[in-house]
Image 1 (spheres, rainbow, N blue to C red):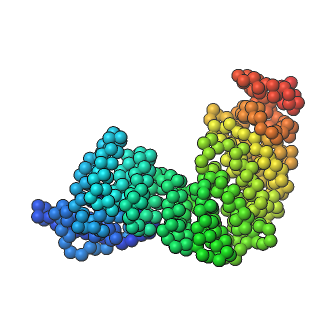
Image 2 (cartoon, rainbow, N blue to C red; image 1 turned 180 degrees about the vertical axis):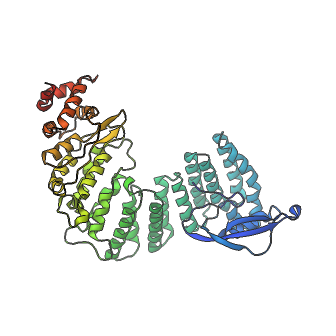
Image 3 (spheres, helix red, strand yellow; image 1 turned 90 degrees about the vertical axis):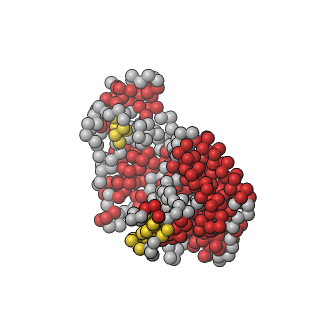
Amino acid sequence: MSTTDTATGSTGTAPAAGRLTARRYTHPALTDQPVVRLVPDALGEAEDLALEFLGLVREGEPAEVGRARAEALGFPAWALVHDPANGHHALALVKEMERLARQARTKVGAAKEGFERLAAELGRTVPHFLPTFLEQVGRIMLDADNRTYAAAFFDKARQAEQVHSLELDEDRLRAVFMEFALGGALTVKALRHYVKGLAARLDGLSAWESFRRLCVERSAAGMPPYAGLAEDTRSLLRRSGLPKDAAAAAERELLWELLCSPAIGRAPATFWTSWRERLKEIAGAAAGGGAHDGGPAAGEVRRRLLELLPAPSGESSWRPSRFTPVWLELLAETGAETLLTGAAQDAADVGAPAAWLSRWGGHLVPRWGDTERSAATIALAGRMAGRLRSDAVPVALFASVPGQRYAALLDVLDVLLSEGVPVDLPPGLSRRLDLGPWLEDRTPGERDLAALAADPVLRPVLREAVGRSRHHPSGRPTLVVTAAPVLAELLG
């Protein structure tokens, strides 16, 4: 959420750093008690003007005291700096805005109506103040934890720009888009509308550069890519005037920067499918060529893909069956899978596949332990078996879940045991293995668990779990157990 200065309405939105100044002000009523304000240098003029309306006069020159995050002008600061002759219209609203801001915490509907009345007044007198005013109302709504109204007022600010044909400051506009995106008050629809606006307002190359900067800033700040990002990227690159090879290189460069961002694991599924071919290119797995000049090494891209445990955004109830096959296909197509199945290149690689499979298994076990069979993971475990045996590093597939239970991908565990791969067994497993999810799972690809039942340590654990399953209220586990020869044998 943004931070807002009471006097100037300035907000922390831009990632760059600037000079921080100490400014000294005097007032006839304060005699020997000056007021000192710490203000980013870029906002100093706005601070002086705002305090001047309160009867405070700056004394001496500002002193630089450090560095501070660069900030964009909000309301009423923007009005005071860009149209001081009409600044009194902005300052006249400050007291009422503060009252409505307090009201927004308890009676948000009434506050919304009050802000809309103020906006109507501004629209009749100084319409060019409307965008920054409406953005400031959006910030107030964010402070009141109402993202819906914050997004609505942000959209009204953009509508005011169009209705009144206002000149736009692209740097300021990008900054406020970033601010509201980070506050969770920017819809994908609004973001894509902004991207279309770039194409309409700017020349092709400038539109691309502005869009690229926004994408990089969003990702660096922890925002996942949005679903239509690949489409918008290609559309703007087609208009950029760049040669075909240069445009393709620019797309690959942006993709790599996004891959290295902290929130890439929450990218929507369509992000990965839309950029499938480009991913293969930067990973050196595309037909007819290896990694491209000037980009990351193919191995670096493949290792980065293996670091990710994707949980796509936009999924109301994410399940392995929804995206796991797509992701594992992508690992295979990009060559990342070869790092799991091929021979270790050096001593540092030993154990990496076991560590990855342990992490992946934990990723596919929901917090509540209701696992779902993944045929793609079962098949991959079989392909990894030779490398896992060679490394001789145990794979940890058991996860502790609520109810003092352990859950695991039992089909994957059965594959590993059948191939002689060492596995890590947690202490206290004997009476805590939860067999219920496996018995209830109707997803194709189940194994008979013969290898698990043949293991001298796990056989009694499995027998205990099978015995408990007979008391399941649904009755289905009992039917499954009696229909499975290996499990039926354990019942005696």
